[in-house]
Length: 92
Length: 285
Image 1: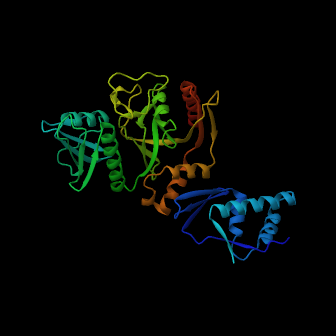
Image 2: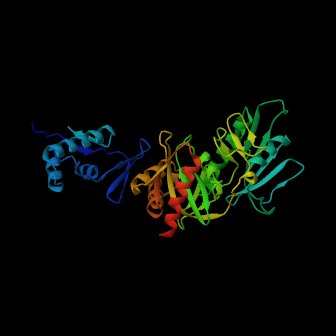
């Protein structure tokens, strides 16, 4: 089933800093630092409110040479984690 | 080391270059501070006093100790342990306000030769116990609590207050005359086996400490720069005084100093030797 939901970065007071291939996100509202690995970092950047979940999976498929089902599951897991951390939300 | 105590029960210290004065109506309360802050030399008499504390207790049998800082902030302690805790907390917060160019981390700091190692971890993980053990393995003491780092030249200043332990360590017996308060043991710097250092020492490595009693041997693995930066930031004390709310300082330190995960075990001697072995390897590179 197509997933047309469009995740976007929460418009919080974030400070981001790329450190080698990972990303640190300082969430000033919650006084936490989140550390995203390179895959999560790419997913996070793709969450612009325009890309659907399916589109993000396609974008990741273009960048990673891995099993399709595995990749799809990984992207969904990352999106779930980002949502749980209140770093992304879904556009209405 | 120099210290000065007048007949009017006044103690003057210089901490990180800041002049601090304590006045007290009870000699034993000054003695406690003298024990804890023995390493901090007295200021020249003409230097401006940055912090002033007035301490009072109605009698030695009265447990309540009043602490007034700069005639404006009033604190009250009900035990010697709390008295030391409040003085330490207030003083270090005020120092952080006045020394905004330094990046303060909650960490233990030791020097091996001219190499400073920073050991960072949440409270209760064993920073002070590890520091106490390392002092028996050729290290000098800079701090068990506070790492004031100058990021411009990557040095760390010594903050050698008395080493504070929450309990008697399993090995390396404590010396006589430790100050035993209700919640901790304080070893004065003149009783530390490895000696101490008040000056700045180049930072050579950062260790992220985790106590792992289930392990038979200490484990030390390189930490990724982002992991190290996240840990450093989590232990930063004056992050908001710095660029990008302090994130940049944490990244800067992590990028410039080798960082490691250190899983320590109850075998403190083996943990120390493992750490020093890694340090020796850095020195060769």
